Length: 338
Ligand SMILES: NC(=O)c1ccc[n+]([C@@H]2O[C@H](COP(=O)([O-])OP(=O)(O)OC[C@H]3O[C@@H](n4cnc5c(N)ncnc54)[C@H](OP(=O)(O)O)[C@@H]3O)[C@@H](O)[C@H]2O)c1
Image 1 (tube, rainbow, N blue to C red):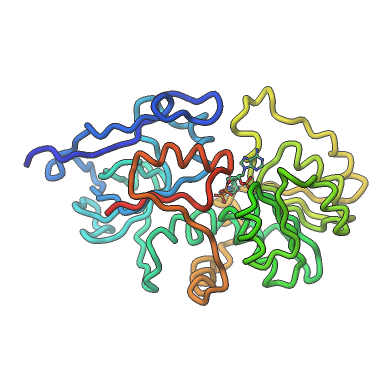
Image 2: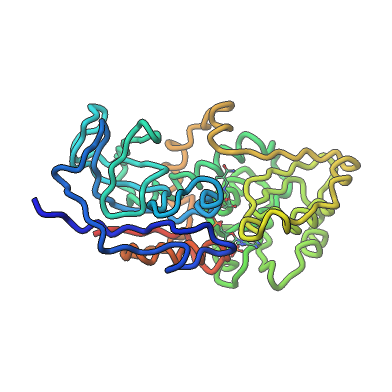
């Protein structure tokens, strides 16, 4: 059979700040693949169904990606050929190092792969967002580390993103008072729609002032790090907990320019616990708190809402990644293939 086009996004170089399309990342529509004969080496050949745009892809550029190889991220594909008896032709497979390309050869030798059953018929993209890494991170991180009690106040930075909005809704469901910030008015509106008690735009209102006006914070869910963390530490109530989930404000600047936190002494005098976590380590230690079953049910019942921004053009992934890193996105970015 003649070669089939296999459009691919290649990583070219480690960006200094936000990855620049056409420089650090390039779209190569000219790449081809021989679908019938491409060696699988015990793996599977998939046709891509959907790809997710995640902030952690920026960090991977710093430490993992090799120049002139496909960008890797969370992706779902349908199996066309298989040399692994665990995966059958027609199965939908999820990988977290999935090449940003129309076709992919995936192997369990290089990454864990999972068959998605999706018996409830949710859109496949749900498994890249609310039922994917971001939703899982929010669910297990909140259940394992927040030690939340009814009536307490939680502040969630980047509250309108997938992680943030799942944390906000989980906390509301447990009777907490939720304060959340985000960087645009439309995202503030979304926070109000999902029941956040105090929703504000951190680019227009001072975080410290808002938190102090609202009686301080018992739990801080930190998605951003940097100066904001220092500020919030000054607003923590006694015996508060800070859950460090992300570092969004710092990945795009060189480590030598990362913000130095001068508020650590406040953790001492206020008896504040600071816990950082990675979702896979938390799951290994504490289990997953029935993540998939519980969150699927909440999504189906309309009790858990997240925002999604979709494109059917692979090349849009480059801009969408940059938008997600500066907050110019309106929801979880996904590329959906027809
Ligand atoms: N610990 C783990 O295992 C784990 C796993 C997955 C994800 N994470 C982290 O969880 C966080 C949320 O992830 P997500 O997938 O739901 O994506 P997300 O919230 O959409 O993350 C990107 C958002 O970060 C915000 N942001 C960007 N630059 C910022 C800055 N300088 N200051 C403040 N906010 C900034 C923007 O939102 P605004 O418009 O609101 O500013 C942007 O939309 C990320 O930090 C991610 O790295 C951690």
